[in-house]
Image (cartoon, rainbow, N blue to C red; front, side, top):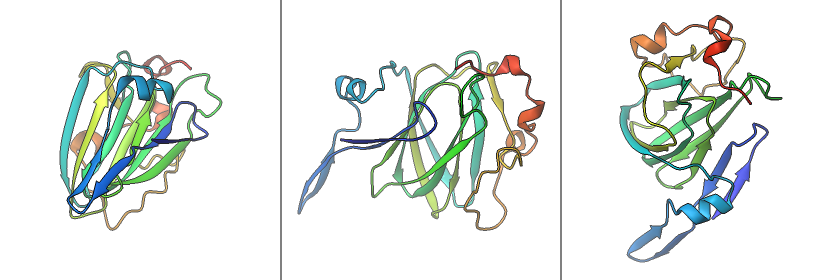
Length: 184
């Protein structure tokens, strides 16, 4: 597998090796020892699957406590996936990085604990899956507004995004108490 690292500490793009022939292909999408060698040593405790229609924007979400690292992948369709560093003390605090993920490439995006995460569906629909390093904790979850000008994510929008009420009314980053944020 090929691993690409970015400016945000711990953020990684993973390209699992595919073996194929006329019948199709096979890929190993998780193997603890191999991913540990790539710098992802956390234990994953929950798998999630989300189906979304074109134009849906989910995020930006995080948890504290119970910060979740996420290994995300698109099984069908295409999304623009984003991570924002919210770790107090990080040299890249408030900066974002986005990648295109789709079912054809099989790329995975590792978002370490303490980062906001969100994605925007570009295709007609998308089947999105991810492993997490901690369980979902509704009382620990918080959101930051997807279009916060202090973060200035360059979403590849095609019209107005479809948002949940929670995401539509999320606060700006400056309105989130520092006690809700992870430490670097």
